[in-house]
Length: 70
Image 1 (cartoon, rainbow, N blue to C red):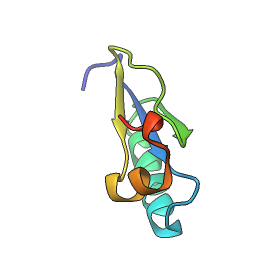
Image 2: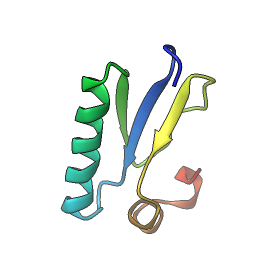
Image 3: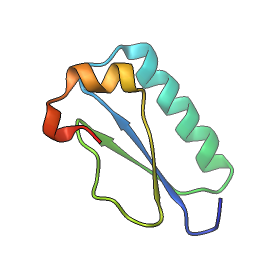
């Protein structure tokens, strides 16, 4: 990953708590490695050349409306 890469951890407000904890743990590990992160709930932020998304599809898609899907 280059120095300008950011990672957005996307979750659904109704998702299983376990997967929220998993995303939190991954985010913490990524930040400790020096990569900037952000979070979004129930939506994907606008695309950007330096932004990578991490989400759990089977948790996000059923709990959000279609316009929020990637």
